[in-house]
Length: 387
Ligand code: COA
Image (cartoon, rainbow, N blue to C red):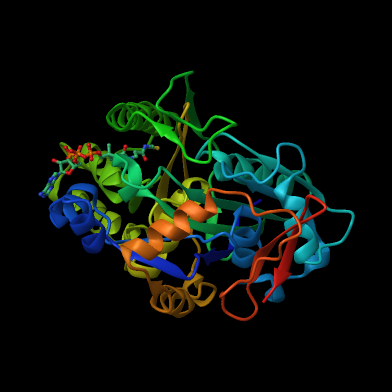
C-alpha cells in the first residue's frame, strides 16, 4: 500500500526583515548574513500570530479541496506551544471544522516534531487506509534582538495531508533514527526565547546527519548515487549546505552536480522565510518540488533533526503529476505581499510579542482577509478569530 503526502500547505506571517538592513543595524558585513549564514529575509510574527493561528492558516491552503469527513487524526508538532496542557491541535481542529470523532494531540521534540507527526500518520493510515491524517508543524523561531541567533529567526507553518495513493510523495518503508541526550538548543519553560550553543549545534547536526544517512543506505542497499535529491532540516541554509557538502564528498561529477542543484532549489523558501523549526524540513521539500526539474518517480532523501537531539533519515518517491497539486504561484504571492519592516519596527514588534497581552484586551490583526489570528485572551481563554 502506498502512503504519503497528498497535499502541502505553507503559511508565513505578513511581515519580514531584510538581512542587509539587519546587518547594517548590527554593524556586520551583509555578506556574513547573505553568504556566511545564507539568509536574505526573515518572516516576523507579531502578537496576533502564534503556532495555532499559523497552523490553521497553513491547513486552509487546501482544506476546501479535501473530504473533511475522512480525516481521522490531526497531529500538530511545535516547540512554540501556547499552553502547557491543552493541545494546540484542538484549536486548529475547531477552526477547520473537523468532526468530533477526530483523534488529535500535540507532539514535541524540538524541530523533529513534524517528522514525529508524519511517522505517526504514516502508521495510522496503514492501519486505517480509509482515513486521512492532517499533520502540522508550526513555529516561531525567537533568539532575541541583537543576539548571534537573531539572523536565524523566522515564523511559519507547513501542513500536510497524509493518505493512501498520495499525489505528491510516496513514503518508502524503513527509516534510520539516532538520538542522544545533549544540550545544543533548548527553551526553558520560563523563557520566550531559545537558548543555543550555535557552533556546537552545527557540529552535532552534521554528526547526527552522517550516521543515520549511512545506516539508511546500508539498510536499503542504496548508495548516494541512487538519490535524485537530498533535503535537510534547514534552521538556516548554510547548515544544510554543510550537510550537502558531506553528501557529495567523493561522488562522481554527475551525482555531485545533481545534488548541488537540487539543494539550491530546496533552500529558496528558507532563504526568504527563515527558521520555522518543526516545519523547516518540509518547507525544503516544498521548495524543492516548486523550483527543481525532477525526474519522474525521483527518489528524495529527507534528513530530519531536532535539537536535544533526535535525528532520522527516510525517503520517498515523487508522484507523477505533483505539479498540479502544489500552489507555487500562491506561495510566491504570499511572500511578495509581505510588508518590509524597518529594524526599529521589527524590534518593537518582536519585543511586544514576547509579552502576553493583558487578559480581556482584544488584539487587532492586519492580516489578509480570510486568515486566522490570535485575538488575545478572555477570562484567560485564548481567542482565535478569522479576519
Ligand atoms: N562574508 C562571507 N561569510 C562570512 C563573512 C563575510 N563577510 N563573515 C563571516 N562569514 C561566515 C563565517 O565564516 C561563518 O561561516 P562558517 O559557518 O562556514 O564557518 C558564518 O559566516 C557565520 O559566522 P560566525 O562568526 O560563526 O557567526 P556567529 O558567531 O555570529 O553565529 C550562528 C552564527 C549560526 C552560530 C548563530 O547565528 C546561531 O547560533 N544560530 C542558531 C543556530 C541554530 O539554529 N541551531 C539549531 C540547529 S538545529
